[in-house]
Length: 405
Image 1: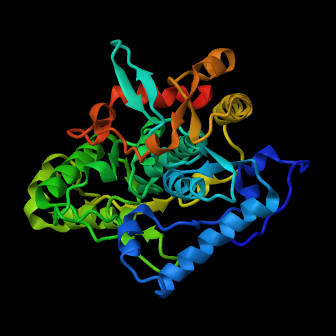
Image 2: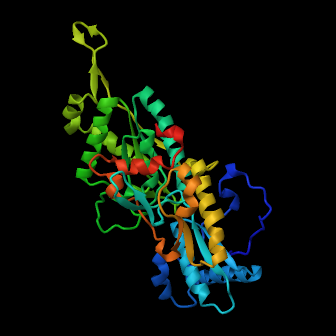
Image 3: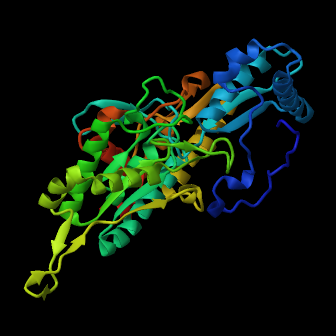
């Protein structure tokens, strides 16, 4: 839209194994991020940064006019929807543009408030998020954690499994269905500076959180002789410009360093030996003296990187897209429901999606589809640092039947 670089894919053959990447979209916006709006408004009109944003807006506007678009459907995540709301507000004030706008949520982070109900076994309801893209990524993370378990068991190691998730821990928590014992998510992170709010700033666990986390991990190790710790990239991020301004690295490695430091601290030796985390073995005797060999668990990091967003979507995702895009979106276009996005009214099992999914679909105002982080209560157990039964029920509805047991 911004550069006027587009092509007609009406009759294009679409390989379902390619996911949505065939659209070749990039991370850009015709309007400044919401966090920058106030600062931009205070800049003089000839300020270079302000001129750049105005050029982007005019470029997108010209594309709408050039194509005589009646309706623009924008697919994307939290940042995309926020930018679209700003763009739509400005377009509405333009006399020479009549394009109407609809959004469709699509993000593996699952951090958009779709105003979806999740009915728990006790009858209580939770307002949750359910975005196309997340079921596929969650299923792949479950498989990744289960594959990693074979190596963790055979090598008697502790692995951190780093996942995407800049602000939200939905993806990291999915690894619990892959038998990850411990999960660290950004929503419940303790930081040294309570004033830090930007996810690109440096964070670290405070001492109490650090010690509690290590005790939980090593208690699991004493029991199973292997542990998988799922870590969201936004938990302890180290910002880098090596891969671009938005890339975070190192959360999994930093958690490894925390665990190694705990193992090496002499203050913890007695506890670690008492619980059997550190063990001394005596393979033979030399001159009536025991030849002691100390077994200390190794700690390694495994990065999932882009793997959860690669390849074919899951069967649940395909059905969810059919309900929201092919069925509900068509009805929205027909009925003129603009400025809104289609969502699923309640969390359904896949067979329910096929049978009654269209009846459960509804629309929400775009501006009400704000960012939604993982609801700590009731989805995350802060004491045990893992998922709750409520989240397990939520996730089991979204992943393949073969992964449930």
